Image (cartoon, rainbow, N blue to C red; front, side, top):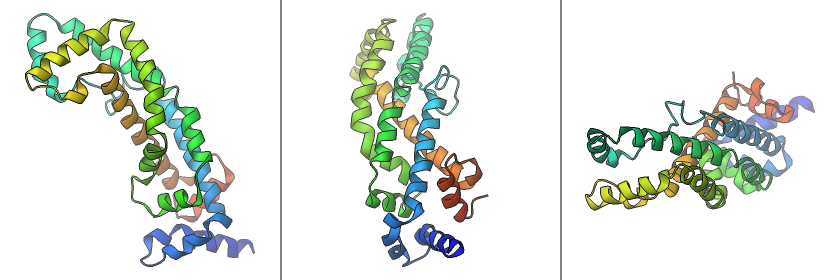
Length: 231
């Protein structure tokens, strides 16, 4: 029975790779695959928050560090020439510290999204593309996390009176066509960037578990992703 069960799991999880084999996912609700996937996603979400939602999680990262909008570069250069460099550097630090503080608050909502995952949701992730995990979390938590992040970002930035300075500069940049309207608010800009980084990191964590099932915390996750042929 044990061998037969493993064969069924292997067939289930490799179904997305086989043309016309998606029908095997119909038995997902009765397989270990669902529990294994949940274990892996909860682990990935928790680890993503632990990585980003800490001091220097954004600021010291070449990949996730939040920089001033690209369209703001011309205005930034002009301001630095005018002796405003320190103010812009302070703004850079404040934006990243705000993102770190906001992401630290994300775990309950992310874990809740995993626990509430339906069979259909799990099927969508298993049959989806490389960004299926990212898209799942984005669809289930984006609105709630935005509402949770905004006041945290606002508190962090306004503490240094950076929000008003950014918004003033961004408004001037927008008037010159250098800054997009959606980037004219520091709260919205940092919140959106923080969410993008969080979802991307979760996807990377899930990918790492698939490649190295031994790193999975849960025994079912190990079994499921091990059956997928991970290294």
